[in-house]
Image 1 (tube, rainbow over the protein chains, first blue to last red):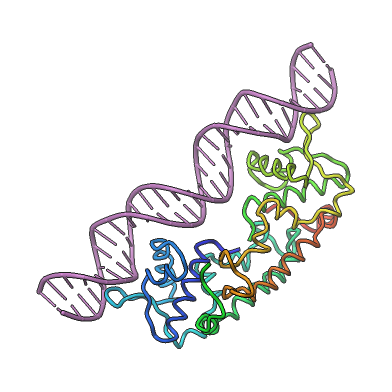
Image 2 (cartoon, rainbow over the protein chains, first blue to last red):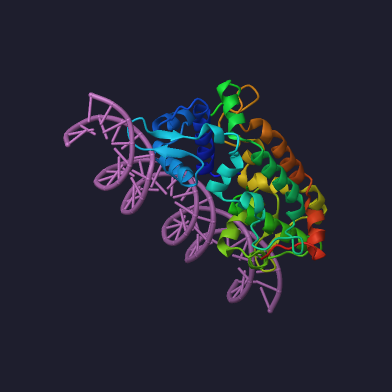
Length: 144
Length: 144
DNA sequence: TTAATATCGGATAAAATTATCCGAAATATA
DNA sequence: TATATTTCGGATAATTTTATCCGATATTAA
């Protein structure tokens, strides 16, 4: 479904979101430890997310990553997925055809219209604040 | 969603199904050409599908691949996907956690229950005969 | 029985993804 | 200002996935 990179990216974003609720900036090491991911590789992903303006970063002592608290309810998991894996999951043909549409559909086309819709809607309606709150309540986890 | 291998595998199976409707056995070359896939790699996938008893193969002149006509309505695309990509798409955690369940769910867990269900049901209800008929009518395509 | 044909199966190779390393740049604080 | 800290960014490496090659094996038909 999602690439490994994307899974790390989502988890990292959610952990940052959890801490950003309270204006706490978190370091690369803290993130990698919290989501159980390879440190250096996670750095690359965070760099990308920063470039895509999903998170913000700050160098130096007391530096790290954060998300403007007021933006938490505006940012969705779908945005994170699109930033990392692109939108082929939401738009692409399930069988990988370059041209697949109503006129010349692949055998899975009709079936996948609603699957992609549900996926798209689900991820677009999951905002970071909502998820951060549940993480903070211990209702959900990012490890194991 | 599906690996490249799995996409080739599904397309190959569907092409074989289309021809098997009429008891026509098809060769590796014909398959690769029909679904626009690398010949040698397709051979490997067909080998796997044969080992998994989804298709049957025959060596020598007039050899090739086929599916017993009477089995067409019994075989589903879900079976093909499971044979190639395994069932992590249907059972695995969206964020890749080893343990992710009601007791300790990842943040996406609840959302993905219904997505996985729909995916599972959709693929389990797509049998090869049905798809083969549509292919034969030219209502769907495996290329482009 | 021989020759031609097609898949099987094992060894490689290429490409893409995942992962590491390290010096450079920026920033906080002493 | 000097130093310690932390991310940035480019080069490189390891792993996995995708892809190729080729001799072996089975099968058909002449």
